[in-house]
Image (tube, rainbow, N blue to C red; front, side, top):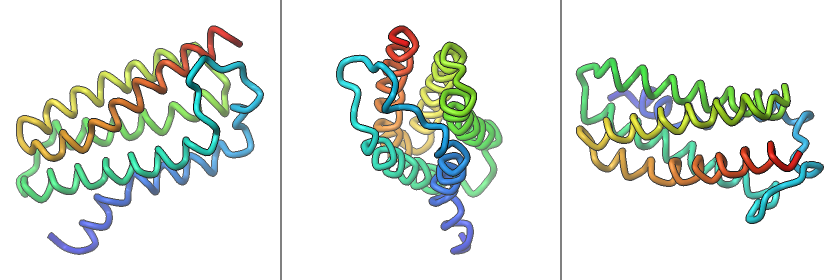
Length: 151
């Protein structure tokens, strides 16, 4: 596999996350919102997401490396969940559609679990690398629902 493809697979999620953060940075109202118990400080989010995006990219790279022939279903699902992930921040922070954000993050969680199951069938390490992502999105779902209820 070419070095450029390796770099693309590993760092593309970080690039998408960075672009979204630039789009929403002036609209993040997290500090002014009423939050449920266990809500982390604002600083925790860029750290957690950077780690998760990197793990996501490594997981996909390892899958692609092991499967040189195309796995169209996995490829489409991977990029779909990345798109849904990116759009959640826009829905929640830019547009402030908090209820829609709940529905959207539940959809994201379904996509991530489905992708993890598909990874597990073909490349177990890729599935294991998605576990922090699943856990964080479950926690983010709790926060999203809590913020909607409290605000």
